[in-house]
Length: 453
Image 1 (spheres, rainbow, N blue to C red):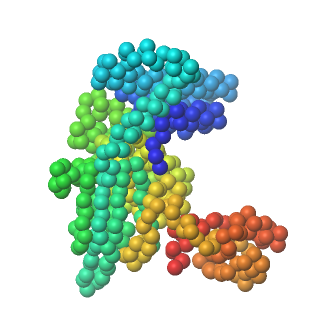
Image 2 (cartoon, rainbow, N blue to C red):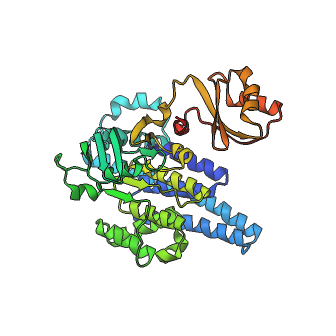
Image 3 (cartoon, helix red, strand yellow):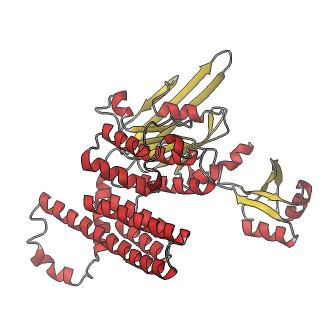
């Protein structure tokens, strides 16, 4: 998923404000500032805007503010968000103008006489359009550089003992900046093994593992490489001292010091919604918040590679979506691009934000590629359903539509019908026969179906 230009990002923020979705609007505003501003004061200002929204939201929830006062303050906050967004665009354009002038002082003069007539006939560009052009120029320059963080060529791993006899079959993949790769499959099929290899914590038995963007002079210096990798194991290690102190310490040992350290930690705490627990200790927060603080510690020092093993395991369903969307938004950065590989049992959630997917079964990659390409040339549509009729009756109802097969999967059924049969048509048939549906999902292009093979 490509990073978005300033005009697109600006329009998204405006739409969120118009829809009264100020939670997402303030988060997007923080990302907007991070991406297009270098002004420290603006970093602090956007944190205050986010905090102001949280305070108003808390007061409204607790009933400590009147309805009229709340609406008045919200209107003021909306205006503040839009004005701040515009100030970022102005700063971004001014910075690019000064940068271009520094490169060539003659680049903006003396061609005027030739082009005046032509330019006068052209409509003037808005500051947003100018920002978009500057962004695309910078993006083009960056794309010429190496984008591959990790390159895996036929790597494999063998465990052989009296107790364990497991083999991760040779696998190939590339992890590129701006991408999220997810590894799925049942337990014991090699997900953690693959992640530990990529994180540099486990030696390979065969193949070649390189880190093109992290290596200096094409030399595999593990000390330098590991300095750019943030690895979160499934069992998170305990933190000692306050959570805030840990974040400051992590930033410090990675070279972020002084006011930059304070600003970066405060920004990350605010962006991930962790303000009320900043002075808490590890033993005082839930498993879900431990995961979110671990994400903050992984991101605060700007690594290039994130390796997360089952990060959703301790998060409730609402926080899972927030966690993944926050990760997706941060990965999308053009200014500080990075890549992530995560394993998860929460298939549909990770499929919604990932670019690539690897499905492992018995140590072998049954699928390894773009999510958008999975089962694209399929011969049938596949639906998963939980309903109040048995398999035989369900087949009798759907056979006239060309249903070729129905499989049991726990308490659900997996239905195979021709590509021409849409989910709306299938549901209409079931509704006509008064079938009560408890669960329904189109898995035609989901790796969910690979769990059934």
